[in-house]
Every structure is written in C-alpha cells, then in structure tokens.
Length: 530
Image (cartoon, rainbow, N blue to C red; front, side):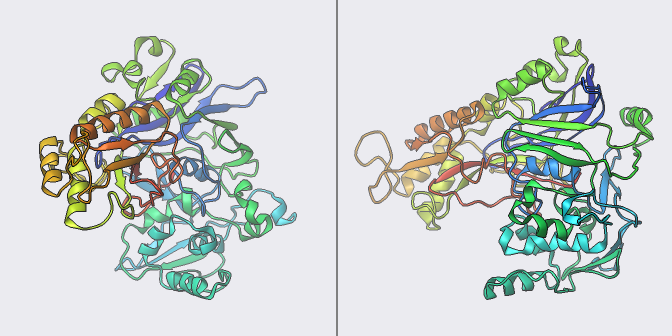
C-alpha cells in the first residue's frame, strides 16, 4: 500500500492516498481529493493550504476535463445535487444543493430531484449585476453539454450508456445536420419540471444513478449565461456555487483557488460509525465549523518525484499528495511514519485504492494489431513475457499487487482470492508461442523477425520521469529475453500523459488511440464526486 503524508505541526489536513493493485501488466497508484480542516495563518492573515500535483491539469471546464487532477479541482468550484459523507462507513450520500433525497420509480428508470431554493452563484460579469439563483435548468444544461459535439467530451461514452431518453438522438441530429446543439429542445431523458425540480428518465433501470447526482467534479451546476458570455474562454472563468473560485491560473504551473465570498453558510457535519475512533475524533474537532475552513489553496505542478518530495520535507507543501514510489519506503518504513518525520508532527495513511496500471496495444498498428491467430499469439506472448512482479518491486517500491483481471481493488466486484493467468510471467511459454507462429530469428542477428521476414520491433510510448524509465528498463529487458527489440522514445506524450490522465467510463476503464506507437503504458482509475 502507498502512503499519504500530512504535516500536522503547521497546517493540519486530512486526505487519503491509495495503493493500487496491478491491472494488466503493471502496478499503479491513484490519489483521492484533499481537504484541510485547520491550516495555520499566512503572513497576510489568510489560511493557506499548499500542495503539488504530479501531472498538470487539462481544463477547469467540466465538459472538457479528461484527467484526474482537473477533477480534483472542479468539485470545489462547482456543486452537484448531492455529495459524500467522507467519514461514513459504509459510504453514505447526503444532500449538497438538493432539497431532500431524490425520488425514483420502482424500476429505477425515473429519478426526480429538487434544488434547495436560496442558493446563489457568486457575482460575475456574466450575470450583468443581477443576483443569480441556482435552479433546475442549471443542472440540465450542465449535463447536456457533455452531449454537445463541440466539446468532444471524453465523458460522453459513459453518459451514452446511462441511456437518457432522447439525448443520444439529439446529439446524432446535431452531428448529421452539422448544426449547433439545441439546448432549448426539451427531451424526456433530462428536463426541468419547474424552477427547482428536475426529472431524469433512462431507457434501462439505473439503481446507482444517485452516484451520478453526487458527482460535483463533472455534473455540478453550470449557468448557461457564463458559458455564452465567455465562449471559448469559459474554462478560464469557471463560475459555480461551490466554496472556492479561481483566483489565478498559470497553465501546467500554478492553480490558486480562493474562498468564494458569496458562499452560503455551511457547517461541517458527518456521521462516522460509533466504533470508528478516528472518525469520531475528527467529528468532535470539526463539527459545527463553517466551510470552507481555508481561505486559499495553492497547487503547484511538480512532475518529478524527488523535487515533489523535497518540497514536502522542506515545508513548502502541506500535504504529500502522492508520495513518490522511490521515497515511500523511507517515508513509511514497515507501514509506519519514519521517526524523523513523526517528530515534525507528520502523519501517514496507507490506503488501498481502486486503481490499476496496464499496457495498451495499438490495434491499428501493423506490428501488434490485427486479429489473425499469429497477431493474437504475438500479443499473448508479449503479455506472458512481462515480469509484473519485477516492475512492482523495482519501479513501484513493492507497492502493488499483480492483477488477476480488469476488476479494480476496493470495488464491489473485486475478489481478492481470484487467481487467473492475467499477469502470469512465463517466458518459456511466450517463446514457444512466438516460435509456433513464425516469429523467429531468420537472419541470425539474435532478434526475431515477423513471419514475413520484416523486423519485429516494438515502439513503446513512455515518459521521462524516473518511474517510467524504470518500467521501460524492465520491459526492454523482458523483451530482450524473448528476442524482441524495443524502441522507447522518452517524453512521448500520447493522450496527454496516459499514465495519469484518466478518461473515466462507467466501468472504470479507458480507451485511447495510441498514435504512431505500438504499445503504451496506461492507468485505469475509478473516479467519483467529492
């Protein structure tokens, strides 16, 4: 498991960071959102929380977001109808901007929710001096935006599977007619019944639809006036009803959020289990305090593990958002915070999280793609030839478990006792498969050729960070054992850091096109609202 470290002597904060089980051939870890109950005051009297992302954000417009890190930011600006009680075990969803819990039909196809009157957007030029109340159409409009082809939202594939009646048909009409998306057109799948009430109707039962309504990272309310006022610049002007607003944004460098001065009165409350001593202690300390508890959040982008770790150790960051794999053993040896860190009031929390790391094949590539028996055998041989345990040990400091299938840890379908061939390492079987299907060394140079005599060379996309270099090193060594050449240009940016930018789908998986590369590393994440 992978630790999260929290500095408690200067600014007290709580968060979780997950360790991952390995999915496919590689291990991966993912992080959960951060909150800070009581940081110390800065010289200007403001309470400031500072931490670092290891990968840059992509957008602050929910309809354009494609990554985990942007989705860590958006729920602090935008608000969904519901949210999670982060101390409740098992998980509990509660009201955020809603007036009561949603009602649903017996077959879970029709869901009705109501907005609590009296919630307002912060003052913004888009509202032309008028106070703007949050209403049902803001949620309907926000969700329709994902279907608008102009945004090319990666979330659309997941929304389409939800089966909102009439939404996919509306999108198809826009595509075929090459005309603007008609937001005024009412559809049965999502519509405002009155000023504060909305109804969602799906083609099939959706008993877990409440989770969608609790996803502030994507489905928080958006005012149409703001989008139309700022146009293509709307992602630089996010306006939501949440506790923070954007104060400064230097892309891929610095994001600063400041307290929303118009945020309504909201007091901290939670319902930890009676036998949850830690949860009860947090509740006792924070109950009744007004939210947000910090005035300002400063997020830096530090991609390399060493400077990110040093920023935390030297007091330049308050939370180790994701302790580098190379530093995790020294930060929490044997699962406990190192004495030198504990003396500084630093605490750590290792948590298993639903995340997995994979290798992806480019199925359109002539080297590894295709569905002939020989090509299937080639991909199977490559999979059998990858030593995932060595990658976990060398690149991830042992913080991972070989996956037995695509189902992610900490999800309801995951079976920790399941054992399959999914991540078997068997180079002998791999070489036998290659021999059987004609991938042999025809010219005696020590490297295998394809059955037609052309070179068998894998072009693998990777990144320049030390962890990725280590993964590439193990992969190259593994493939050399099989007699397969590997070319791995560092710094190749396929799908914008595929290892960390997750295109969320309902099942927690992703799909990418691999460009000009045969093979690439990727990470799968299950992401939810905050």
